[in-house]
Image 1 (cartoon, rainbow, N blue to C red):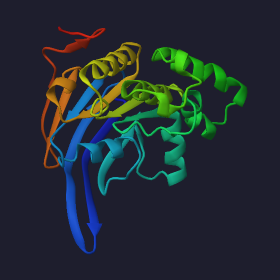
Image 2: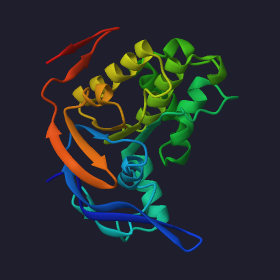
Image 3: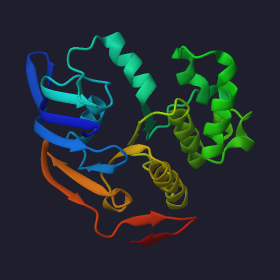
Length: 240
């Protein structure tokens, strides 16, 4: 059974009696442990699609199954609980709180968790170790470079050990070296069993994934495996 199945999804926004259709009859599935890139130009609908897959928005029509369970009829609170337990997000703008420490930023998803707080320290430490940011735990986020901020954002996405990690243009605000470090981390997380869904407009970034879905004007125009996949190492890339 696929981890994610969507069928005939559509999304329309309304503003002052003006309707704007963003997604049209989108259908595909994602297997557990896949590394999928959703690629398209600005305004193609790729970020809206990610927001629907990540349970941040609802589609206007169509079907969305997560592990075979329809999410359509879930309440907003039920969606929030499901999102916090099973999904982690990494955004282009980092979305860190500037006047809090690295470990406090990473802890944020745990504040909504039912687990005892004494477990939080171990989970935060493990997430920071996974992105090689243990040495910055007591730093404030404003003291970090762009690449370090994105690694903290990945640690925050990891702290609840989610099934799925969504990364929306995660290298968009980074230099090439920092971008490669972020892609190396995402590939490593995928190798360890996490499903990774990457949204990007750059072919060179999308080719770090194993499969690319291309979206144009709200339609899927291609869905293909990556033949020459880019493997990010320490400062360099190889193809396989």
